[in-house]
Image 1 (cartoon, rainbow, N blue to C red):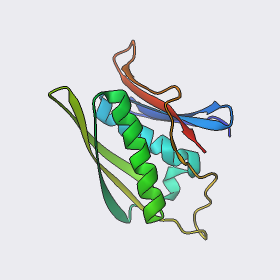
Image 2: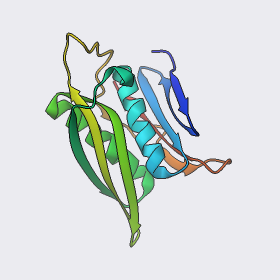
Image 3: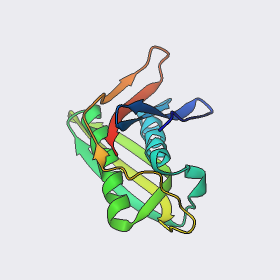
Image 4: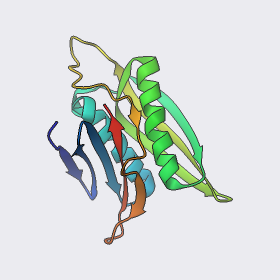
Length: 151
């Protein structure tokens, strides 16, 4: 799969090739925004997010001892929700809290049921991996999250 990238108002999401799997990356002014953009990158592995309508709303929560693990859990929870609900998402909203050295995430995803007549899914994402997993500030002060997903 070739690399894809979308940039808008200081935020962006990207796909990057990684052997037989695919890397996803989200960049934003905050970690909340970076996680949201990574959600779009996850969708972008499977289908162009602009082809998905916001018909149904799903809430997602995660807890982890650090941002790296929180990002890993966020992506795996999205994959779980897509798989069990037979949905694909096109918009994400994330709020991350850091309380007593534990990170928690309250997220929302909007999308619709997968319809083979209108959705041509390129590949199925099986889950996030720890390969190239990171959640960090870049030199220019933006927040970056990334990992390789198993396809």
